[in-house]
Length: 92
Image (cartoon, rainbow, N blue to C red):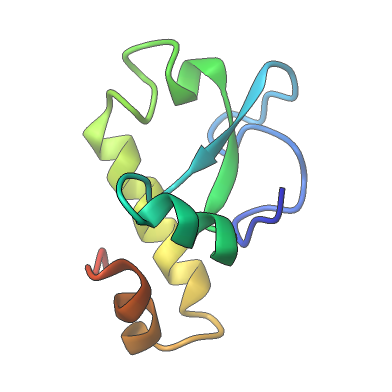
C-alpha cells in the first residue's frame, strides 16, 4: 500500500500492528480511486476502522481528523487548489 500518511504498517490511531485494515481516507463514488492513486490511505486496526463504534466508519470526528491530516500532508508538497481539484472539498 502506498500512503502519504505513514510508512510503517501500524494503526495510524493507536499504533497496533496486528489485525490491520487498509483505509481509504476519501471514499465513495470516485474518491476511492482518487485515494488509491494519490496515497490517501492509512492502516487502521479493526477497532479504529469498522469493528467498533470508535471506528472511522461510525465516528464522524475521527473521519474528519483523518481527512484533515491527509489534506495537510498532501499540501506539504502540493497546493490547496490541487487538493480541491482532486477531492472537491477543503477540510482545513
